[in-house]
Image (tube, rainbow, N blue to C red; front, side, top):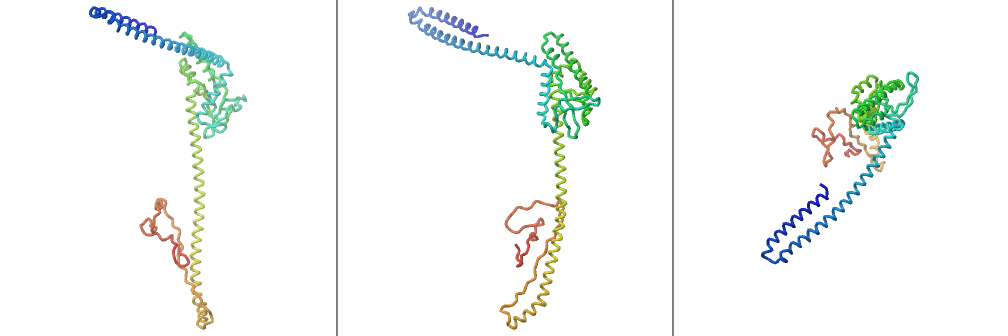
Length: 378
């Protein structure tokens, strides 16, 4: 229901209400003066007039806004129609279709997370086993060094004619033509023998179509099109399927990098372990030398006391020296021996706290206390 019909209904309803009011006024006019009986009617009619005037103004405003919006939508639709026609006309040109397919292919590769010149190369040149020069659109490198050749094709003419067809029989004919065009692309791509042009390439070629609708429409007329391509080592891929393939390739690259990093960490760990073994040997020999030095020192002190100091004390007894010769004391202490602790028994160090350190058996750990020259521990 539009605004005019609504206003007409309101107007008719108001007139009927006015007529009923006038009838009631005429019936009651016999008991009171006419002027007093018609006063409420005049007020009601004035109020109804003001309401209808406001509704009319609102309707006119809404009608103007609606007309403006309809005009804007019409202009936008016309512009969109022109742009769509221009796009369809441009895509009918072979080199424009080819460029569109290349752009779509690059976007899929970028979304998959692959890096140019590292994980893939665009349009590399190669020579087949027959000596023919070929240049595929993309060559993707797998983690194991093998390569996958990708070539973009845009079967557009039959597809757009099938979409634009209004007659069902014509549409089916155009769909069959579209499937035939895609089948021709498969046969032509198989004849180029791309895998023989790259020594480490996989034994199949990926035929990329830049729209899922191209493949779905072709499969309506020829359901065995995918099997036809597999039999000729050609895999037909749309953006969704190629993205899944390239995501898998990117994941394999990440796993390969992680494996290389883990191998590098393992080699560094082995080197550090070897050097720690050498250092432990040096520390063991140094501890043995320190223990031997301490023993030799004590032996020297004993010999000094028994032979040299005896004569020196006689000078003290004769009063020749001003002060007695001091007696050196023996050095007390032990060199800590390196112990081999099994890995499963290693526990985290205890939290720092006041008081003596406790070993993991509950006794005071005094092995780290090294005596100084005076015998005090630090």
